[in-house]
Length: 188
Image (tube, rainbow, N blue to C red; front, side, top):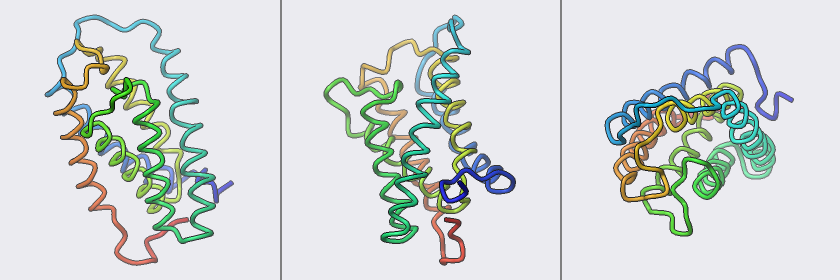
């Protein structure tokens, strides 16, 4: 089970800590670029349950657990982090609720989701745990898109280009800071 990234203790807290950096920047840029409605969302607990179990845990278990582990055994841990992050980014861009994909995904949207996936892949590589990123991903999606209801839905890509571009750059900077300098930094 620990090989799948289901580790508690220090790896859990480390992965949650790194992911919270991205979450805080997402909330900051979200409030700066996207105007919110002054009303409360209905069914928050059901949304959180869905986000936690299906949009976060199931996807990360398959991609950063099974796929990461199999690619790490085959081609090495760094390749596993990058490939599972790329697959996560493409999958998120096509299927996540906050994606603006409606048959035509904007380049900035895909940059954001791929950078998000690479960021989570690097967190998995550096900490060896996915549990922290699962919880933070669910909280990030809940707060960003369900508690702060956007005035304009994410299906209109032009309104979200600035947010996606800004967050893509933030994730790339965080990815650069997390990049391992030596193999002893790997926690597979």
